[in-house]
Amino acid sequence: MPYIANTEADRKEMLDVVGLESINEMWEKAGIKHQAPTLSNLPSGKSEFEVTNELKKLSELNASELTCFVGGGFYDHIIPAAVGEICSRSEFYTAYTPYQPEASQGTLQSIYEYQSAICRLTGLDVSNASMYDGGTALFEAMMMAVRITGRRQAVISKAVSPIYRKMIECYSSNLDVELVETEIESSSVSSCVDKMAAAVSDKTACVIAQYPNFMGCAEDWKALVDKAHEKKVVAICSVYPTALSVLKTPGEMGFDIVTGEGQSLGIPLSFGGPYLGFMAVREKYMRKMPGRICGRAVDSEGKTGFVLTLQAREQHIRRENAMSNICSNENLCALTALAYLSCVGKQGFLRIGELCESKAVFARQELLNIKGVQAVGPESFFNEFVIKLPGDASEITGRMIEKGFAAGFPLGRYYDDRKDQLLIAVTEKRTREEIKAFANAMEAVLWN
Picture 1 (spheres, helix red, strand yellow):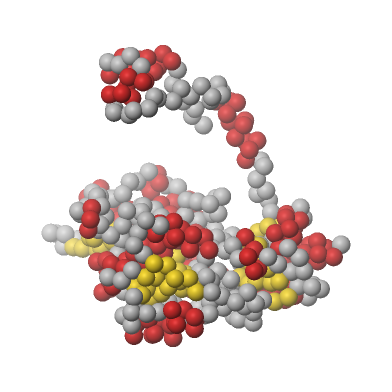
Picture 2 (cartoon, helix red, strand yellow):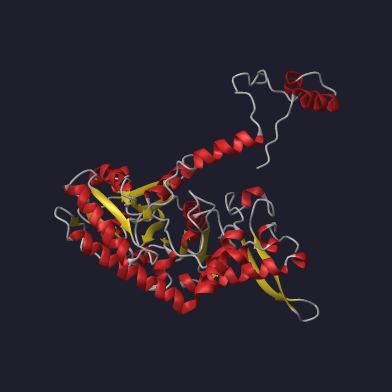
């Protein structure tokens, strides 16, 4: 890896060019009142070889060979080899935001096809050209609802990802927005739809649901959406896209805005990113949507072409009218999602969903056969479910790592009343042998 450090001679040369004697003088010219930091506490520089070795040692501390049963919004799916080959072409991975359509037709067409895929997946009318990640996309959806309704209250279930809720809280901390979180029962994995419906009032801009919810429960939200629409409230849904291979689409349930994390569509886990946020909306709300929309047009010679048709960002319009300031272009990740969906195809995507579903059922039953392990909630699920353990889930998952398994997500990290509950995800990547070995290891940890 390249390792560049400025020497004293380098710094002197740069100061000479701008006609200054010292960094402090530069500070003064810039109007900064305090002195420049001396950096005297920093250790001395290392060679490229030493830095490479140090980073290699640090990387080897990661437990990268664990069999993964962790979910909670980010999933270990099979990625076809062709996806990486397509997306690593230099035309794609070196391309910048395609502001010049005459030089960017390939990139623009891939964006257009990606938008079309997201619309088909969610059952809604219009998709933007990608967003930063699932959490910020959900925040943007909430602010979009505020712009649409002129109201300042959002009703959100505590069964929505606690990671996303924390992100929304962070971004809203200096805004005039009231967040109303509805409680859920610790003995269940339900979102408590009735409590959400009861919280909706004339002050409410939007209701925010997750499908399936953070506990893995797949619920029909039609009744809540209808109740929201009666009060002219925008209905927002954050989805796990792979689940939409077999579940009813959010569009069929009447949602107005759908967001989600696209990591499961061919993007590796990569220790947390880069990932892909997506957003789709009903056509009537298109001009309130953040980000960019790529459209298909016809040029003066009658040839089909592609262009960024709507760009309601602060770079393009007056800042106070901008629809967003955090809708970063994630075009390479969006291309990855498109390549993945194209490679697996309609029937392949359906088959992936069926495998996730059936393997999760099998894993749940294997675990429930262990003494002391109990089911939490009888509700339906896709590929993620919650079990109750005879002990602290965080401690048990730590011991499972020693046996080669990332055993799941201990819910006690975010829910104080669920210290003994574990959220487990099963994808098509997990074999029956791995699932049986997982259950055997869990039994050994609990009772040996």
